[in-house]
Length: 296
Length: 277
Image (cartoon, rainbow over all chains, first blue to last red; front, side):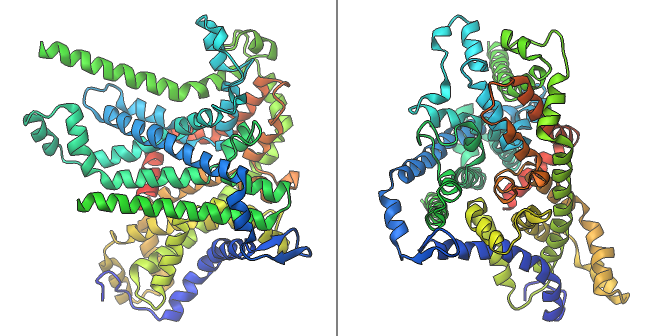
C-alpha cells in the first residue's frame, strides 16, 4: 500500500464525508454531459416537441457552412494565439527574467493586470478601441496624419477574426508570462552559465537549453491556449456577436444562437458535442507530438 | 567595446518591455480617465486627459446598471460559492490524499475529467436541465454552477498540498483520542491556510468575472450579476462613451484593487492553478 494513504477509516465514513461535494459536482457536470450527448441524437424543440433522429444532427453539421466557418474560426484563433500568447509570452518572460531589466516587478504587475479583468469588460473596452468615430486606433492614426487608414475595424469580414484575437492575446499574455516565469525559475543557473561559457549566444541558450528544459511548461501553456480558445464566447458575443454576417462566428456562440435564437436544442447540443470532441482530439494530438519529441 | 554593446543591448531590452507594459495597461488607463470626461469633451478629444473631470457618467452608469443591486448579487454569489468550494475541496482533497478506499480512482477520474473538458461548453445542457427542474432564475442558480465548475482545480490543489503535511501530526492527534471531525477541523485544516488562500483567490476571480452562465441562466433583472449588467450598454454606443467606460470601471475596480493589494498571491495562485491542473 502506498505510503501516503495511511489514515485508516471505514469506507462508509469516507463516503459520507465526500458525498455532498461529489453529488453536487456530478449534478452540474456529469448529468449535463449525459444530457448533451443524449439530446444530440434528437430533433429537440421542447419537452413536448421532440423526436429521435439518430445521427441526423451530426450529418447536418458536416454540411453546415456556418458550423464550418465557426470551427475554422476557433482553429484560426488558436493558431494566432499560439503565436501571440505562447510565442510572444515566452519571449516577454525571457526579457522580464533577464538580469538587465530594471523594475521587473512593476512590469510583471502591469503585464498581468488585464488577466484579472472580466471578459465582458475587455470585450467592451476593445470595441471602443476599434470604434470608427471614437476609437483610439483611429484617433492615433489621425493624430499621426494617417487618417486615410482609419476605418470601422470590426466591419471587415476578412480581418475581423484576426482583430478579435488581438484582445485575447492582450488579455492573456500576462498569464502565460507568469507561468513561463515560474518554469524559468526551475532552471538551474549553472546550466545556462556553462552554456554561456561554451559560447552559446542568448538565442541559442533560449532555443537549445531553456526550451527543452521547459517542455512541461510549454505543454501546460499550449493546453490552456487550446481549451481556452475552444470555449471562447464572451469577448465575441460583446464585440461582434458573430458578425458581420457570420464571419466571426465561433462554436460556443453558434451553440448559443442555435438554442436561444432558433430553439433547436438538439442541434445546439450536437454543436456542443463537437466542441468537446475537437478539444479532446487537439489535446490528445498535442500529447502525442510532445511525447514523440521526448522519445526522439 | 563589449561593455558598450552590453549597455545598448540592455537598454533595448528595457525599452521593449517598457513599451510592452504600457500597451498592456494603456487601454485600462485610457478607459479610466476617459470616464471622467463629459460626452462633449470626449468627442472633441479622444486621447487626451480630461480637462474638467466630472462624475456625471458614474451617476448615469450606476442608474443604468442598477449598480448597488448587481454588486450585491455578485458579492453574494461569490461569498456563498467560496464557502462551498473551500469546504468541498478541503474534504474531498483530504480523503483523496490520505485514504485508500474502494472507488477512490473513480472519484479521482471524475474530477480529473472536469479539468479536461471545456465545461463552459455545457451552457445549453445545463440551461435545459435547470429549466426542467425549475431551478432557473433563483438566488442560488448560479451558485450551483459556480461551485461545481471550480471544484476540480480546487480539489487537486488541496490534494497535492496535503502531501506536504506530515502524517505525524494527525497520528499524534489520533493517539490523543481526537475524533475525525476534531482532527479535520482543528488539526489539519488550520495548517492548510496557504492553499485555502490560493483556492479562494482563483475562485473569487472566476466567480466574480463569470459572464455566459450569468447571462443565460438568470432572466430576472433583480438577480443579474455585475458583468451581465454591463450588457445594457450593448448596442447603445451612440448614447455616450464615457457612460460605458464608467460602467466598465465600476465593475472592474473591486478586482483591480484586490489585485494591486495581493498581486503576488494572485499571480502565484493562478500559476498554481494552471500547473497543478
